[in-house]
Structure formats: structure tokens, C-alpha cells
Amino acid sequence: MPAVPSCIIEPIWDQFQMLIPAVADEHPLGCHRPRIPDRVVFDKLVQVLVPGAAYERISDTTCSATTIRRRRDEWIEAGALKELEQFCLEGYEKMVGLQLENLAVDGCITKAPCGGEAAGRSPVDRGKQGTKRSLLVGGAGIPRGTVVAPANRHDSPLLRPTLETLSRFGFDLPERITVHLDADYDSKGTRGLLAELGCEARIAAKGVPAPIQNTSRWVVERTNSWHNRGFQKLAVCTEKRIRVIEAFIALANAIIITRRLLREAWNTHRWATRPTRRPWPNGGTSYSSSTARRRWSSPYTDTTRLCRMLAMTRRR
Image (cartoon, rainbow, N blue to C red):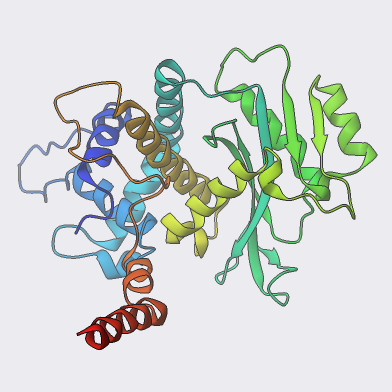
């Protein structure tokens, strides 16, 4: 079973192959080993991202782990993965709209057992190594920018670089922007920063219960859930370099944006490769096998089914 459905990964690959720098595969004697196709390596990278498989576990006779890492670094050096994310955002903006009038920012801490440049003592995991992602999303929950930092960094200092990621996409921003934040950002410095940037602040007050369902912050929590539940490489970060982590985040964002675009356009547009079923509402892949087992083989489901069978037997 593929890591990502073909209706999602094929459009991504069609655009990504145009962003990859061309490499001449020629030898004067013609006796060298031919270069492994980029599509094979790209599929291996998707397998690393979605199930969180190690490079050595997915390497086979078609592609080695060294080739996957080397080709990954080539694409990162060329900026192909970030350009892919930008292309997906531009397509979503043209067809649906990014809803930049309402923005939400929040941080998410994940495990980083291998340490690295973006690893620090996690305050929520008994001081173990962890990584924080400061995520910026639009009103519909589409990821717009991410800043990677150690887990022991507070959310407030990461707010400025997170909001500055809006400038790298080159979109026309609306005149009035409202930024929705949780109680961790409730400070004079945060309000002064948003006033300096010309944004309106909607910050939850400290010590005051504020259900997330009654606010506009739930979209960023949902996107963080898409990252952690749909892409195991982001849930347990084993990469040590920040540039590699950012590249995997860009690829995950491209998959999320493409899936949401297909879901929004499924009812209004028709095309040759249109899927027969509407894509899943989650932004990552479909339900994982472990989630499916919990859903269909849970004790509650089995007990309910057994009670129904006993009730039918008694009626007879």
C-alpha cells in the first residue's frame, strides 16, 4: 500500500520534477553505473516522511540509503522542496483562497531522541531531548510558515520570526489582519510586537478558562495534529540538521495543501485524474493502520456488538 494515495502524490511529483536541477548522466566510456531515477528516490523520501521509516529499512536493490541522503541534500541545496511548498500555496490561493485576514500561531513540542541543532530539554517530557515547531496557519488551517527551535524555547520569542515567514511567499496581505494566540503569548511584549506589525491581537487571558471551540485558534491545533498523526518523521524527529527538518516540513505541507485543495475542488471541478471518492478530511494521509485497528477492534466496539447479538438471541 503506498504511503500517500496516487491522486495526491502524482500532482506533487509532476510539479516537483520541474523544480529538480538537471544532472547530466553521461560517461565517455559508457561503463559507469546509471543514475537512479529521481522518482524512485522521491518515493523513498515519502516513505521516510509518512511512516517514519529509517533510511536503511527502506533501502533495497533499487536505491541505497546513501543515495537517498545524497539526493535529499542535493534537492535541499537547490531549494526544490521549499519551492514546491510555495507552488502548492499559490495554487490553493488561486482556486480557494488562504484567508489571511485571520492568522493563528502556536508551538508544538515533539520528541528528538537523536539530538541535533534543534534539540533541547523538553519541559513536557521529563527533560528529554525535544524539538519545537512554531506554526503559522491561515483561517482555514493551511500551513503558511514554520520555525524550528529547541523544545526549551518559549513561544513568545518565536512569534516574530514565525510571522516574518509570510514575506517569503510574496502574497498581497489584507489591510486588517487578526492574529489569534493562546495564553502563553499574553504579555506586553507580544501586544507591542503585533501593534508594531500593524496586526490586531486576540490573545487568551492567563488564568481565564477559554474553550478552544469558541475561538479561532482551533485551526492551528488541528494542523499540528495533521503533522504529528499523519507524518511520523515529524512526530519523532530523528534528523539533526535544521535544514533537513525544514525540508521534511515543507514536503509535509505540500501534501497537506494538495489534499485540502483536492477536497475543496472535488465538488466544484472535474478533471481527468479526479479521484472517485472525496479525500479524507485530515490533512495528512488516510487513517493509519494503528488508528484503524483501534477504531474497528476496540473493546468498546466488540462489547457493543456482543450486546446486540445477545439481545437478538433473547428476542428469538
